[in-house]
Length: 363
View 1 (cartoon, rainbow, N blue to C red):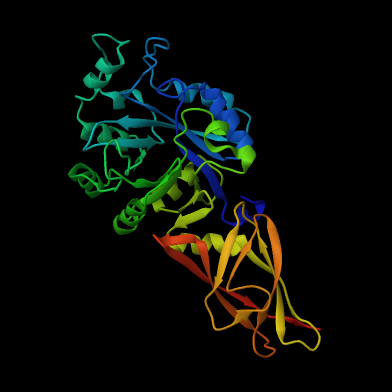
View 2: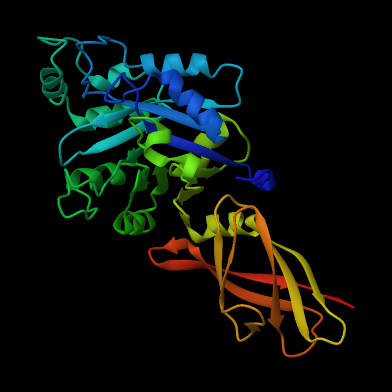
């Protein structure tokens, strides 16, 4: 996102990704290099605690190893590497990310295995450790926990995100704090609604296992899903506090999604009226509208006025501006333009609404 957003210091983050230290296919350093190229502020390499397909080739007993390698690679760079792990269980637990942990090893709960190189045996043995105990340990470490891909068809065959009794219990105990509403190519309306209804922080992630270039093709204009964390400063402390406070907006494809109060903080610095004026002898105000974001923004008029040279929907390209004529009926000292941002959602299928207030110049 553009530097104009530093008023609220949104941190561009990807908090769910993998390397060869679980079921990914790249070295942790590659995740750092990709993040720096993409302009991210923070990442978390969240290896599966229990599911380790590469144990025969990359044996390791320290579940913190991927983070240590990535953290060293990011030293001296403008990138925060947050320590995290993915709790990986069958339903009804599912997959849960724990970030801002201090030590991943106690979360595994098992210290020895009959065959440390047997992926399935390790998974089955580790899965015997009570999931609630893992949640408790992570919370004792001060971790932020969120439910991953809740609409994953491997565990929810109909693709509908519905919590289990276990999830409800963890939320009630204050041990589950967020939920992914966008993961990779997928988006879940049900997860969006569940987050709103239960006070969960909304998260968007890549969950990348291969290369970002392969999965999201940034060279063709694509991008990974990210979570914009609206923090007070660019620090792990401020980021963690903002996550617990629910101060996030998800950037997924050409959509922004979040609570209305968070979009109210973000949108006024994305959309700017750079100029408003009435040309000589004309009662149509010319508006120069700028888009300071990295995605096109589609605006719909939500008032009785209409555009002179456009339909009631207009699109401002990313990092660009357009000029439109607005028919105000007569010259006005102050013009309030009610708009809906069609690709910024405050709930499923519900666009964000805002008012652009201007005092037009007169020629």
